[in-house]
Length: 112
Ligand SMILES: Nc1ncnc2c1ncn2[C@@H]1O[C@H](COP(=O)(O)OP(=O)(O)OP(=O)(O)O)[C@@H](O)[C@H]1O
Ligand SMILES: [Mg+2]
Picture 1: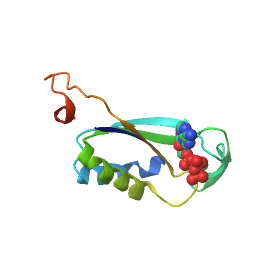
Picture 2: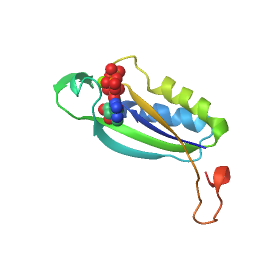
Picture 3: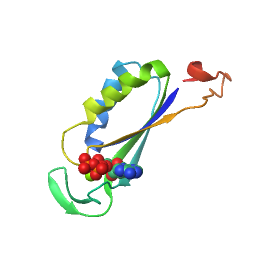
Picture 4: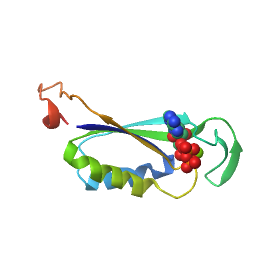
């Protein structure tokens, strides 16, 4: 199993979510976050306006995936969230040791 954290532009959330639903994800967590990358939040175009600020609004999506879905999910997130401009975001990938569905006590892929 893998755990993916992707920081994306808020405007791309719907497209990314739709694309992930199409490949059959069973759940995800979404959080509104603030952050910055190499440009330190400066001179990044956000919704057509240029701001000089340190933290810019982003959306963090997190999902746990069976190993067999992982490559496709990364591909889908990249494609759906890319505009080719600075600030498009980042994907962080972790090995996931275990998952538990609390209600049933299922573990592993069947808990996802
Ligand atoms: N090294 C990092 N650690 C944690 N979060 C990061 C890191 N780099 C970027 N992020 C998060 O990802 C968001 C988007 O980063 P961003 O796409 O601007 O990265 P970048 O390295 O500056 O690339 P680009 O040059 O394409 O803008 C940031 O606002 C921040 O929330
Ligand atoms: Mg940047």
